[in-house]
Length: 207
Image 1 (cartoon, rainbow, N blue to C red):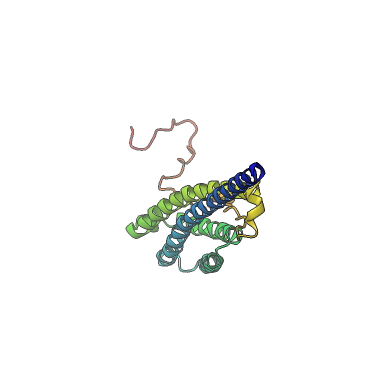
Image 2 (cartoon, rainbow, N blue to C red):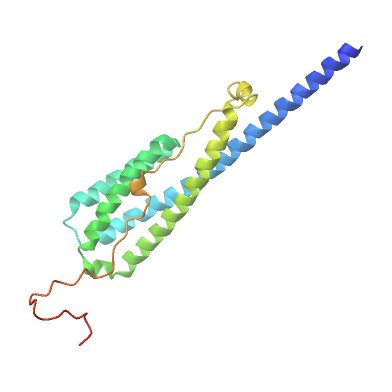
C-alpha cells in the first residue's frame, strides 16, 4: 500500500512538472509571437511610406532613375520576405532596403529646394519615428526569442518541445550600419576658406 502511494505521488509530481513546463513554453511562444507582430506592423508602415518618398524625390530629381529603381526593387524584395514571416530572411531584405534609402537621401542632399518641401520633411519625420519604433520592437522581440529558445533547450522542457510542436525561432538581426535612419542635413556646409590670408575671417552676419 505504501509503495502504491509513493508511485502515485511520483506520477502526480511528474504530471505537475509536465503541465508547468508545457504552460511555460506556451506563454513564451505567445510572447514571442506578439513581439514579432509589433515588428511586422512597423515594417508594413515603413513599406507604405517609401513609395510616397520616392515620388516626392522623383519630382525634383527625375534623372536619378537608377536610385529610384533600386529603392523600388529593394522594397518589393522586403515585402516578399515579410510574407514568409521568417526573421532570418526578413532581416537581410530590410538591411538592403535601408542601404537604398541611404542612397535616396544622399540624392536629396543635392536638391536644397526639395529639403524645403513640407511633404518631404513630413515623410522623413514619419520614417524616423517608424525606425525608432522598429528598433524598440526588435529589441523586445529578440529578448523574447532568446528566453523562448533557452526554455526549449532546458530540461525537462526539451523533452516535450518537439513532440508538442515547439520550435526555436530566429532572431531579427539588423546590420549595425543600417540601424540609424538616413538623415538629410538641413545645415549649411562649412564656410569657404578665406581667399585673402591677410584679411581675417568673420562669421556671416557680423561686421
